[in-house]
Length: 526
Image 1 (cartoon, rainbow, N blue to C red):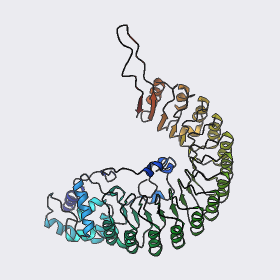
Image 2 (image 1 turned 45 degrees about the horizontal axis):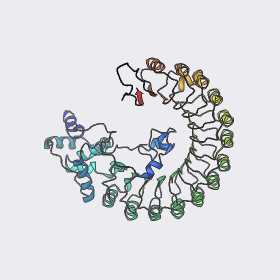
Image 3 (image 1 turned 45 degrees about the vertical axis):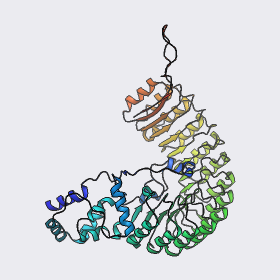
Image 4 (image 1 turned 30 degrees about the vertical axis):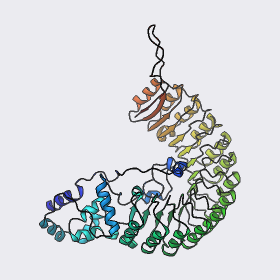
């Protein structure tokens, strides 16, 4: 066993850092990335595509079980990065060779003879990709085991978007074969329909596919998937601008197991495409359509009518939606847990009343910039949705302290509360939250940016929230440094984001009054 430990120490642990940290050069995002500062991503700490993703609203319900079994390469230099990709291009059976110490042949023989193949396979199943590549250099026997397709069921190439071309993807799909279940090629802009045809023909057990921002892909890719990947459950075609209703129809009618669709920023998918999608995918639990201006009331009603199992719905920036669409949808989607309707400025209190009446399982709501929502609507919501955990009311400018009272009285599970730029919130509103026994135990995050009426009294009320982890008070001009210090002393681990105007220096008789220090400053206290 000492030999085994020594061998693994040299060939797996050597030069390896934290498996979850990627040291890959960041690449520039496209303009649509900026537009798509997706609320579901901004609100979550988990990626939404089932690999590593987040939205202050938490991710879609299926995301928690789809994280990668192996974190993608932990590369500390460009050389092994290029060598690995070169290996894939050549479809070689031997990974790049390292110049470190060579493994003793005697040790290899002992390990191969003492451990059965099944046990080595089991050990390899816990390794990250870079460690697998190192193990592939130990011997021909280990090379065969390490590069076996069963160890490569989840592939995330998002961070290698500059290096991944069609040949790499094709050879990788040939190597993985039917073992591959999850593939993420987000932002790999060189990938074409032909390349995806090779992937679909070899990886017929594919369950999750992310091709976000793969701008060359068209309906043809969805045709290949429909013919070969019958087990597909999750597909993300966000910002694939060449895909339209015909492509949606092709894959929806063939892949009956689809549970998650992301068509965000697909500007050529119309209400008819959404209708077809809903009719063909009755098992749908997650649907994201951020920025889809063709997401009309008719589309929303048809989606709800045919997809009553929906748990996660993202309609951020669907500017065509009005109360009629949301009221019709909520009548069918009684299981809805997460709803993002940020920037849907035409919605009124009638939408909140419908949510309170029908969606009693609702846990997360993002109503950012829904400026027509008022205390009347939030009263109905709070009385009907007692399970609410996260609610974002940023820029809901008509909301007052009454909404805080309704939430404190009716929603005992609230953990994250965003009230940024709710200018009518006062110290009394924060008092309702701070004096709630449930909030004192459960509240984790409260954002109070740009609430000009708040004073140090609000900070005093929050001293009762013993599990508070983050407090945002940017531009709360009446809150002083002393109050911030007081709560920081009470909760040393509390992260406080605060802004204080600079002090104007006192002029002296023989000095000028100008001072370079008179520059706004921002402080983050952790």
